[in-house]
Length: 287
Image (tube, rainbow, N blue to C red; front, top):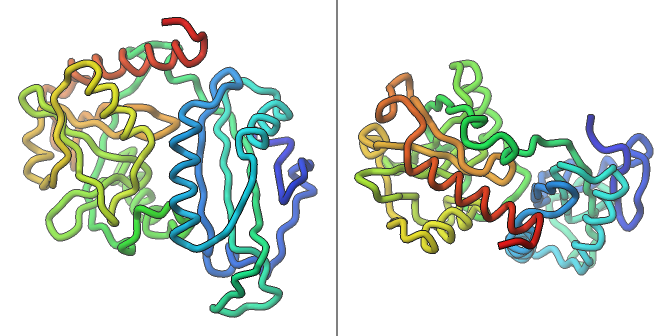
């Protein structure tokens, strides 16, 4: 069940009563940005880095906006019963009144947010996380993937391709270099070292990706941000993906080929433990 109450342009309203103009540029052109933020037991997980990335996306599209996001999102979660929810928020350039590719800089942005229930991925421990299969496919997206924009058709197509192949994610490759998943960032482990594609305009700076690296630093786990090839992927001891609502997920096969010994790896288990400890501190304030 999704939101009973949504936020739209300054008001909390029943979802069925929320209306957006057919001339909104988010609808017509995908002229909009978004974020997805998990809440566990009503408490936001990684709110600050999500909002920092939102600011980056808005600035890149030159959409001016001033809003007290923590107050809005906390109120929205409360009105939807709290608990474990993901909050989707979207900001479009607004309603132009007609279909035209150019825009007026004084347009009023459309601001929307809603909730969806999610599973508490930390409740069942590492044994409750299923390993997944992935495929690798061409990255046909535009060259500003660092902007979390709503033009997600390429992502949708590769994710559907993965689903039809019996896989849970599609990893994308451009000019021989792996970028990221259709809805995740990528990590591989080789000889105890953690590797992830380096940031650039063709990769979204995932908030969970950053948390993985932060936790790795704190735990003394060596890591490198570097270019990765398809061969690196196949030769890896472990492969993971990461996203806000899934944390870190072990990949057990790539294009039908087994990763490592085909089991969830020891470094993944260590990272999941670090995530669980971080989550516990956030929820309880306890060290």
